[in-house]
Length: 274
Image (cartoon, rainbow, N blue to C red; front, side):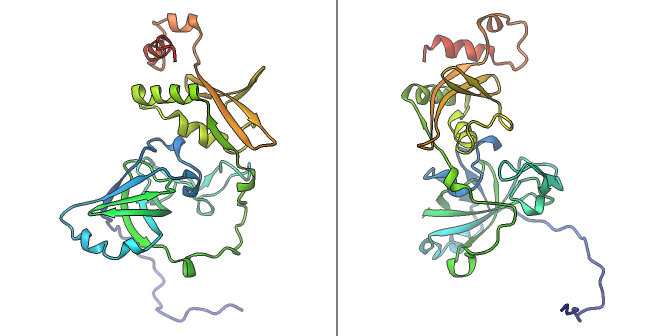
């Protein structure tokens, strides 16, 4: 049975522009889109900070928020400048689906929404965890999460399946962790975040990822770098063993052809004997 709405007879939709002013900004070590987990809850205990703008009475607006375990954060996908009606999800299906049926960032109004764990509030700084929000994201609004009205665990999830039971633990051998630290310090490159995101699900699937099989395991390519790792299927564990240069010695020596402008960095990396 369909009941018609008997309200106003004016069915013309007004499309006037409206302006949203940011209330703050997010500070996070997640800088690039390839570093973000598919859902905030997969980000673990990594702490980010929402810094609200001063001189706007936001300190009063935060009153009593400390009592909540989680908050909704609305923010702008500031790295996206266009939208797509159809997107290719990273998991669950190989078919394109409508963007409104996904959490993808390619949206008409660039608005993101994440339910994050509230750690602490210190003046105009809100410390959060389990967040997938990128560094520099403008914050639009903050609302408390209410389990009794916001949680519907038995709701249908359409084409999406949790898949958490198929998630792999990604660990880094001491040498690989040291190498990742060097790259982060010297090139602001967070290969640990990238590797975790790419390898926590289906770490042997080369059809969607730049993965190659070697005699001693697998190699994941990131630009001109190679991430060597092994997989324990029974234990659902991935071990990143080493970060290698993707250049051969001959290619590095050919300084005249440096399309990615990073051969000097690779030389420094190799000379560091990490």
